[in-house]
Length: 197
Image (cartoon, rainbow, N blue to C red; front, side, top):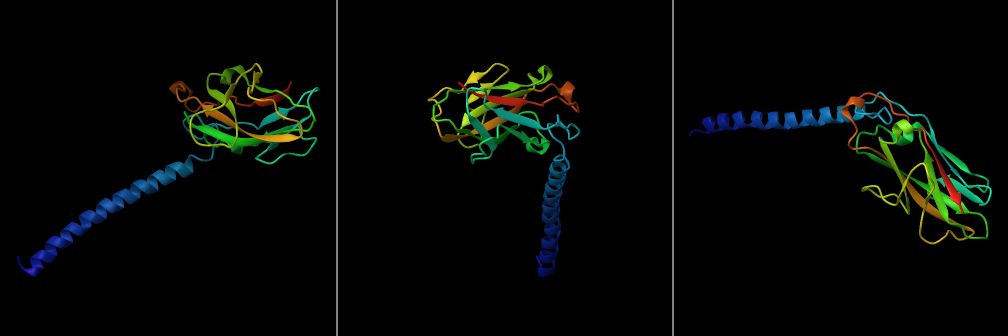
């Protein structure tokens, strides 16, 4: 085979490689466009057209001096409620879990058992699950105690006086969400209340 024939054979192979690389690049750009295009909504059931209002957490009752803060640092003494903007729960698809840390502070000198519940419209109960776990937020399945309409005790030792604890609030959109709900909006407005006993 002459050097010219070898050069011709080699040049024929290069476009094939370039086509493969270009195809992979096109797929990556398409995937990026899909991801970018679908990140605008919140609690979107299969698409990005649904939105949720703010959600809030309240803490304390007449018997307990508790405060709460978003994040891992204690909040101000009188802070008994925090709100999460809808952007906290960005574009959830079936099976997605969003996690956000909250910190509870016991301002009293006595210890308290803690419990919590979720006030959530009935229509959303089958579509979402809520859980609260002590510690930082880590990837994986729901952990800790699952929350419902009735107060659930945290278990474990009571929260000592003049201390703070960080918990991870986890919200999961059901992985078995019905296809009939595609493009619909559930009503995930919720209030989580933490009680001291």
